[in-house]
Length: 382
Image 1 (cartoon, rainbow, N blue to C red):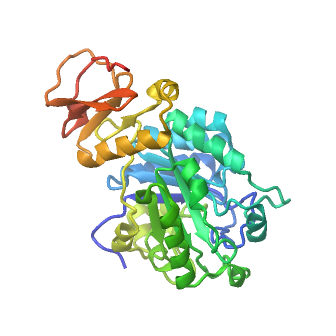
Image 2 (cartoon, helix red, strand yellow):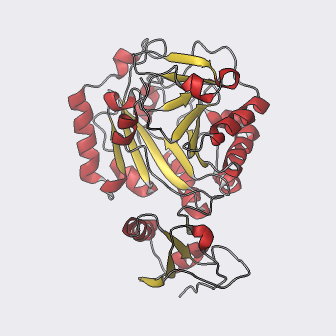
């Protein structure tokens, strides 16, 4: 059952393979025989970008970073097509250099972190298939790289019997993500039912976990709670064979191949709910690095000054978030160096200077469409 409204984000599962063995994972794609070849994946991106209501693409798996340079090339291509880009990963195969190299094209890096405890990660399978565990130090390196190179950091956490009594918020505070999504472990027939009795948590246990995190997290606004009900039928998902699929009926319902029958016909063959998409806060905007018509906050240029003045990332992000909320997306915030260098010096809309205590001067340009902005003014670091 579809509606006349549209979901603006597509989750593209590029690959079924993964180097981890999470017992609760519902993205094993047991019925998928082979994934779409690289050239056809790029064609899929063109088809997605041609749907004007699709604004964001999230590359997932399996583990998408197993694709190596192919993933980087797909992120770059999607960005050039005008899509806001996101990658969801367990983080084990990437490092600071990877974040730096992809940062020009990647808007959001989502890292799956379920626990800060080795034993819990071992029991749940959140480790390599030969038993190599994730380290907190590695997560901190990736988080620091995101902040340093201007990539929005998001954390995904799945609540299971293994971690239901943990307080992960204390570690999340160190990572300082812009968004922390907390999922209730979901049973999907044909994917994870063999181990799910070990993982399943009741609604009451899940609620208790979320309340514990909210009591301890430094910035409560980053938390997004996603129950089993909200997870079902609230995503547009493409599997490694290039078909839409949905989980609204307990298992997976799969469409014909999108490249063969077309986007809209394939979409009509699966179930989705725009209302649930909105209810789980799926509609949010972080800007697009190749789109001058939306809000984009450029922060990397004042990081040196920030370190010199001992200003935390949390202080920076809190101020920038406050400004973004105040102007409802109809403003360009230029931090540090100029956002763009153009020949004309003309600002057709009123501008305002905002002082951020201790570290930087920010100019906020009011404009309905950022393409109207023409300036080569220098913004001065204090």
